Amino acid sequence: MCLIAYKDKGIGRTLISVALYTFISATLGGIMSLVYSFFNRILADIINQYTYEGAYNGARTFIIIGITAIFAMVISRILTKKKDVKTVELKVTFCENEYKLQGLCDSGNLLTEPFSGKCVILVSEDSKLGIEIKNTSDIRKRYIPYRDVNGEGVIMGICPSKIDINGRLVDAVVASSKNKDFGGYDALVPNAIL
Image (tube, rainbow, N blue to C red; front, side, top):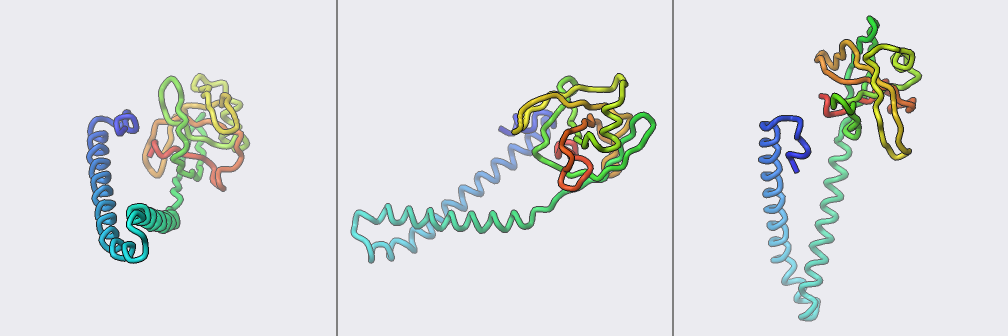
């Protein structure tokens, strides 16, 4: 599973991911065993007092499942509230013009250019850079197939001379999207590129 997720990141990143996944799985399994044993001891006396003999296992199981579900919902709410929106500063240089953009990082943007495998940064087709992409006849123009919840199609992209994200040069394709709003940001940047 880690090899599939991190196949382009090298063997070192894959081995670290396998070790981390194994550690987290073992820790979670240990915690669940501890919770089960703890509540099993506490609930055994209570359930035996208020139920008939055959109901013990069923009642214990449903109570532990209920406690686990409540615990999972509370943790999920806490983690969701602490989740920050990650943004980046982009400087895209194309045809001797520099475009400064505010980008929203999106783990759901998995779009890649089919021939090079480069990640695709999306900008609105109505933006200055989007219009430049549409009007260019440069050989760096790329046609990128996509599929989303609304259907499938092809969008136009370019390989800019330079892309600077937060002071770091990256190699990616910039494509224009019909989507006019990326949550108030100028571009949608894949997390994989960072």
